[in-house]
Picture 1 (tube, rainbow, N blue to C red):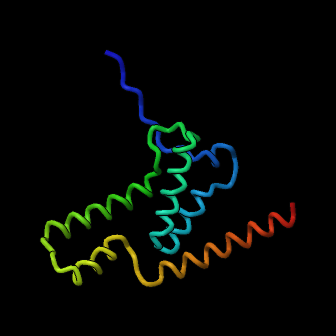
Picture 2 (cartoon, rainbow, N blue to C red):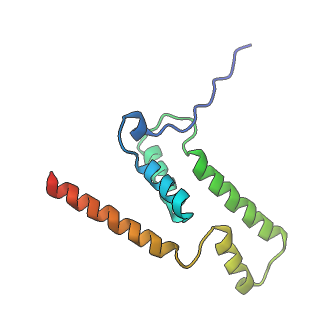
Length: 126
């Protein structure tokens, strides 16, 4: 009987190349702020890597992204199972399931401004 190949975990191509990782940067920012937009940015980065066939890992997403998606999924199923039908009461609970609050976009805008400034400085120095 042959052994099944072991599934490789997510391999960050930037870290493998000894470079600063875009994905690691958004993970650290998510851990620091709890802002779920950083998880969604991480998802977007991974999808881009997958579309470009950059990563050869059998798992296209790191655990921290999957953990968030699992929590959201469980929360949404719980809402469904509770039979909530009033849209006005349900909408805030859905936002809560996604970890969204009024400040997530403000924090994100600040982060994007810093990234844009860094890119501008790098272009100026090049």
